[in-house]
Length: 99
Image (cartoon, rainbow, N blue to C red; front, side):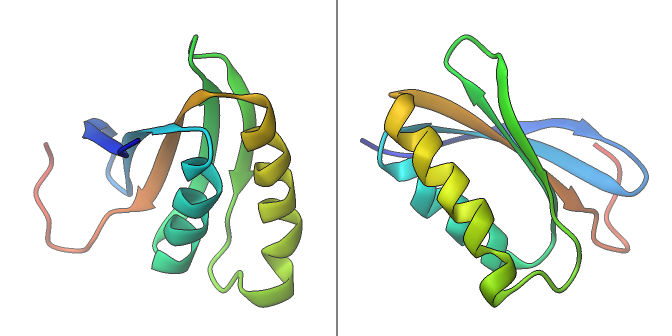
């Protein structure tokens, strides 16, 4: 079960969105990794039909105990879905060109 990263789906002046497809047990670990990257503004989890299951806005500096409720919710979602996609909204790095 490999994580599949797709190309960016939308770029704005301040953010870049990308979609990552995951299967079952990879959901929690993938979300945990994305949160620790630090430049993620929000994470949206969709089921295999594309319906939004949950969206988590992330503020700068979310760490430690503040992440626990998010990860608990993601763990519960992972138990219910076999395939899902994660849409990640990231801060665009200064100096990068628009796609």
